[in-house]
Length: 140
Image (tube, rainbow, N blue to C red; front, side, top):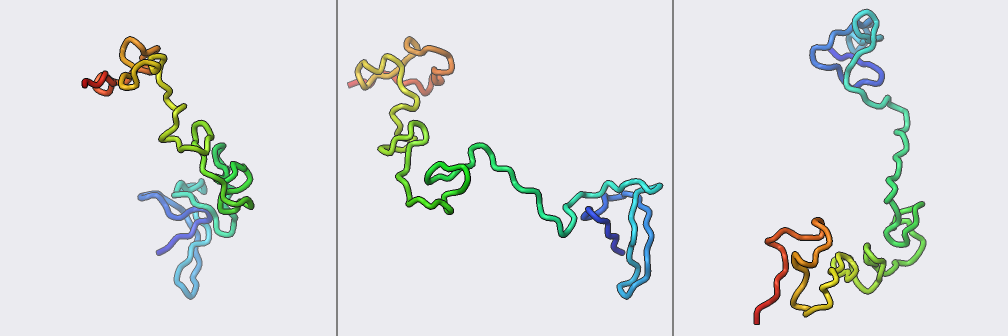
């Protein structure tokens, strides 16, 4: 048999209910379903039919990838396609993977370009990569 409860998709396994029913062309149909003593059922909730789902809230970072506007997405943008920009510094000359400003080298970058930072140049433990990833001078 089938129980229909407004606002619920199904009952929990083993959940006890009380209900009234009527005979119809479909057989017995439940009219009112409650928990024991008329209390609420604890089945799996769902939205009742006919009601619109609540409006989705946009996350703070949700914006048009074309112009940066907050009131629409790129597919609805009225501007022509804009040049792609680096997500770090906003330059149109490169993308974030090649950004010269991202992860800028420490002061030792003015040395031989084949040498980069070492333990003696790091300013904090977060800036120091694990030992296996530190750069060392190239040997000629």
